[in-house]
Image (cartoon, rainbow, N blue to C red; front, top):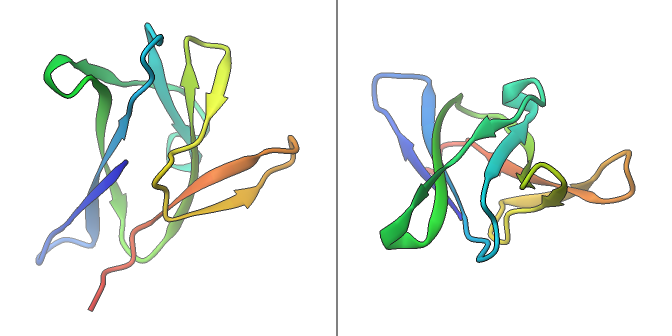
Length: 100
C-alpha cells in the first residue's frame, strides 16, 4: 500500500510504502529512487506489515518492487500502475503528481 503526503512549501512528497507478507522475515524496498539498491523496511507489529517512508520529488513516476527474504520479488497490490520490465515480470509504479 502507498500513502502519500504532499508539502505546500517543498517540491517533494513523503511516500509511505507498506507491505504485508505473513511468512517474511525481512522485506526490502528496491527502486529507481534507491538506484536499485535494497532498503530495509521496518516490521510494525500492530499493523502486521513492513513499512518505510521515503521522500521523492513531485510530478514524477518511479519503478519499484519489494524483495522478500533476499530471494522473492513482489509488487505492491495497490501501486499506482504496473509496467513490464526486462525480466519478463512487472514493476510497480509510484506516481508523485500532486492532485488538484
